[in-house]
Amino acid sequence: MTPDHAPVTRASATLKRTPHPTSSSVAAILAHGFLGSPEWSKTELVNAGAHVLGARRRWLGPLATQILQVYPRPPVDAPRELAAAILLCEPFAEAVAKAVHQRKPIRVANFVLRPAQARENRQPRVPRLDTLTSLATILELTSGELEWFADPQHWNRRADRKLQHYRYEWRQREGRLPRLLEIPAPRLRTIQRTVLRELLYPIELHGAAHGFVPGRSAATGAAQHTGQDVVVNLDLVTFFAKVPAGRVFGMLRQAGFTESVAHRLTGICTHAVPPRVLSLMPPGGDLNERFALRQALSRPHLPQGAPTSPMVANLSLRRLDSRLSGLADKFDARYTRYADDLAFSGGKELGRRTNAFIRTATSIVEAEGHEANRLKTRVRPASVRQLVTSVVVNKHTNVTRSDFDRLKAILHNCLSYGPESQNRGAHADFRGYLLGHISWVAALNPDRGAKLLQEFHRIQW
Image 1 (cartoon, rainbow, N blue to C red):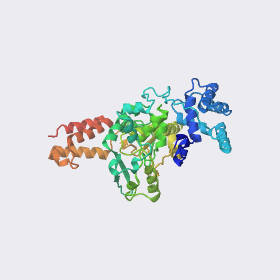
Image 2: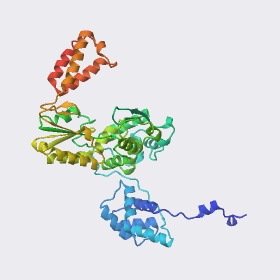
Image 3: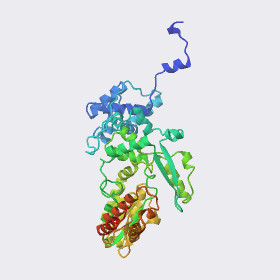
């Protein structure tokens, strides 16, 4: 039988059929065509669209006009965003509707593929990564390994337990909501540390953030609130789990990373907990709190246990920090944040309108997707001991009296009965453990720290 008279089968008919791209596919192809035009102008965009479609359609002119109104400059780092904008433009929607009505789908004649490019106005210290290849290179991964660890389709959540990137530990807390530790596997943890060092540290932070920031600490944050008439403390509920992947992606895009690079980095820094782990949640907390925690953990979020999570949380809360700083300025007050601990302090204006201030601050926290723990809200006037991240701030930074007395007693007993008698926690390096505590006291109160250090040097090790 000659090829001209070959039998027509269902498979051959399918292969012979001209494919009809969906509207989203046409929009994506047009977006790449527009970005590949030599000049970002109406004439060139129409020419680029005509090249993609193989004909100069009437609706290309109005479409180009609307795109130029939305994007005065070409979004070279966001082809997917441009495709979504094309889908929403009225000329394109009308053209698709007309094609469906006439049963004459919009066909694509030519494909133009233009690699995304990072914006020129990105933060100066952030490395320029235009493509996934450049991201894989800086992380010392192959393209396949990058896809495996970023897991853009969330397959790892349903993978065999031996293949999963995280192991899990539930921590039960008496009378409180349990906490889930999501501990990354060694290879992923190494990759996350590289991301933290090379890509996250260069991004500018808000000045109010003091937790997990090089050069800042609980002591530097508390020092901002010394000698004030009133100190207000707020606490955020389920801090890391309430930072969704969408907010992480938006933060990375604002930092200047292209869509594809920001998407893979978001996958490396976030995680969705498997159902089998959620089913093992121990008792604790009321039903509403448990439901909210289960919902947050089942979606991609910042895992508590990943080295990138504290820094990503700080960067993702930049707008919250800006809004709360602005609120504090209106009350002539100061604001700092150490992880999920929010601290405000001020003079008579803040003391006179404390309730209104707390209501406004709480509404801002809720508007940013978080929740304030009302049971941990504290208002402390100067007549009582004022604490910020467990640091006394009434006149100057200081350690609490109970902590100082406890450490002093341990040093005295080490001198009297030997250090082995006081190592009740079985610390491998008990000497370094004590030196760390003394250093913390010295950072808050140098005089007290010097006295404790003098006592420490008398111990026979």
